[in-house]
Length: 198
Image (cartoon, rainbow, N blue to C red; front, side, top):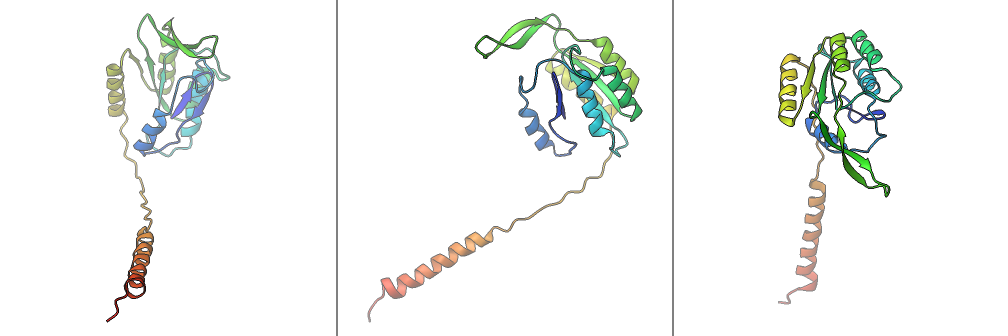
């Protein structure tokens, strides 16, 4: 999972651990990194994470709500690199038409929401997906986004072998020690403190 705004970073490496992934996803907050939309940087970071993968189906889902307006890597160049490594990119433009609340900082540094025009570079997203053999989708609400993910999931099925290791930690030591201490206390109480004289 790669998070991008004005720059990009890897929030989670490749994993089949869905619980960890959901936990890391819940930690993403608006304002974590510089504002902007560096689509090329986000895509290039994802390519870098997947390029060595031996999986038969290598897919990137690029989810964005804006127009590329910053970053060191052009999105089209990042798409060319993805295609070179055989990575398919499914692009999703997310957001409602017209205007939507947008986080901004007031003069005191507090986050406030202002209404801003929703702009998505659909032409660019279509070009990225076309170059890499993927598809472009448009999501205007959460229901549509869930449907898109379901559709991508049907298109990209691949079996992978996962080795699970279970590590057991023995915890009986503490309870055994507590039982021994209580046993010794019981002996001391019976024969020393509360000793009965015949």
